[in-house]
Image (cartoon, rainbow, N blue to C red):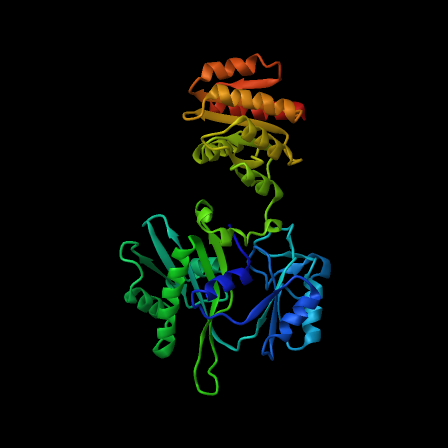
Length: 404
């Protein structure tokens, strides 16, 4: 689950992380009022969508010469103009695709006098089974570009969960960012705070880009500030964090994916034309691959899990068919914990309820497979049975082409 930047910063601030002062706004007037609460003299108006690259993005409604989704302003009139441009309009960034995302929330923050920008992120390193901190002196840039062009400028520090965060991890972060003196101490402290926040809230990813050093103040002191933050949480742990789950913004998610989550279905919309309903993520990936191998493209990833009921199967069918691009459906079930006869009954009930109008190919294997096949064969519905995965892919592609 993702949250907005302003929510991420509010959460990190609870763990002592230094962030610029800021306030969320849902209307133009709220944005102006938010700026009025800040010391100034600079205010940053930031579009809040679940995507990166907002500053370089463009609003569909404003034309190619308009400014992006992050704007530096100096007066209340400029704040109002920026908020008016952003709210309700569609921001297209490198991460949103051509469709873009409508901006419904803004974040107005105090401006920072930036001296240097860095990159810092935390994630679960599956290879080592540890939390990894990734740091780079090249902040404010796409980290993918840095990794491709200058990989030596990226440092990774892994933390043994049995040991926890130790002072040497903080020193490694400061060294990786090439900070010395008081700034190195700030970096060590920040790294410890971020690790604590990551563990305490069951994050799956934390990205700060940029992390900045401010120019020296009158006393000659600089500060390390989190200028932007992107946070994702492990969905399997959200039952432990009702307060974090309450931050979910469903308007930022695909409506079909939101509906799927209500039935504990793992669903991701894709750009193809053959809908897939499978049990098991690995089998779902293989199913999508073999559809492509046979010359067509999957319309979705959908894993019904190991305990699918008639209700879940019906919901899955409805979600798949809510996509107007779907021209056929391939059901690929391996019945281990799940019995094939139960799945067959669910498929029939779902097909009748949704008034199925596209070709349907079903491949069943495993527990009670023959009973399941018999149920499908005697259903009176135009369901095409398949013997194995390869046969299923060939048949659904042929059925779709014939229907066209």
